[in-house]
Amino acid sequence: MKISDQLREKIEEQIATGELSPGSALDEATLVEQHGVSRTPVREALIQLAAEGLIEIRPRRGAVVTSIGPARLIEMFEVMGELEAMCGRLAARRMKDSERTELVAAHEACEKARTEQDPDAYFYCNERFHAAIYAGSHNIFLREQALQLHRRLRPYRRLQLRVRNRMGTSFKEHEAIVRSIIAGDADSAAMALSEHVVVQGERFGDLLASLAELAPAAKV
Image 1 (tube, rainbow, N blue to C red):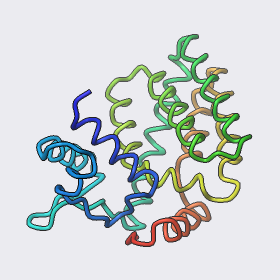
Image 2: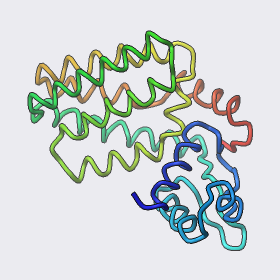
Image 3: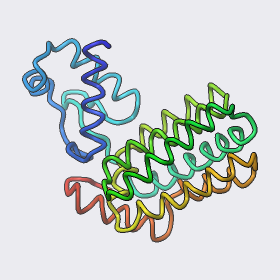
């Protein structure tokens, strides 16, 4: 893996965990010193992150972690819900036996993390779970689009898991998704995934409260 790709992943992780909150500045010189690399891979990594929408590069002001307003965030989760619903509908019809096995294995890994009350471990298992559904859709373009938006919403999806009882609720929703896909029920799988992903009502209020608490610098 290229140095710039490794650095991009490290910064992605810092954004996802809240270590770099929305509005945080990313200074090239500081990144060079922190990671012991030259300016070239730092610039390449920042360009990649900007292309993903995770940061903004502003003329004469440098790069900052993107801040998303509440209305925009709702819209993004609505689109994510539709993309996931499409993936689930196709996965229920097209998944191979080996892919169903991987989906169940990812679900079981989520159960272990939930039992241990480890939100960070659950986050990674959850990513594996959704990636298995994207792959199972056997639609390359849809998978690419879902992964791209999933990555863009990563920091906010991670914060959701820190809301009280969210892990347990998420796992129950996963169970319904797995049952529908294994049964080949495309409509139920689509509905279950859409409801699982879309953030509205109390869930959105909880997300904003968590964002304010864990990332005080955020402007949402």
